[in-house]
Image (cartoon, rainbow, N blue to C red):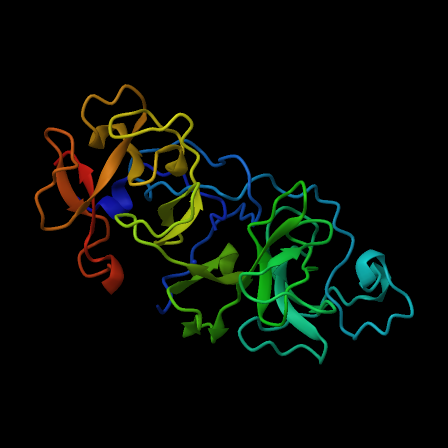
Length: 306
């Protein structure tokens, strides 16, 4: 059995991104932080994915991409060009960053909805923030208006404060995406509208900040808020990936012995080693399909019933 594709799936809506994995289609991607979201696990779907993505925008976005550099003569709040002066039909390449000087190509929602579905040219803020630095967005995480520098995007946005962190956008090309940041993976989602370099982590390691855990996301593993309250370990019921404590994944009940719900937490394990973390009757099954694991994740397994 291939665990990577047979686990119950509580997908992030981002969540949600060494080369790049295959493009994924997450219909409700959200770069904001908040409560867990997504549907309960179902049998024979992709493995669950945590949702650090939070509440969707309110759909009130009134500003779109621009085809001209803002000269400051007629601005809307935050120094951005008014909607009437923008060219909503202008598309650009996030990979190539081919917008006019003073602008950047960034994913946004061209209909004001809570999902990225286009790429457009937007003015670069004065004194912009760099990678891993704090940033803010205007209107919502989907507006395309943020304070990050060229080639960056404000991600993990708090829907209440509109504050997040600048992440790098993928470079290279659609056929060969690249992330220049170390230990980052190019996440391709929303039918290719979102191409973002997401830092990776090891679910069997301890690489995440306090209060976060390493969970499956965008076919890789990345740090997101630990949503297990109270802590949930092997055999405990779960609904979302990050409703299990770090070091555990939320699996379909058929894979966890004596699971009292439709899904329960199960421990990650080292492939090829004695599965000491597994519950009685479980074995350590590779997380990825044979031959499909990225080199840095070949050792990652998950405890399942055979």
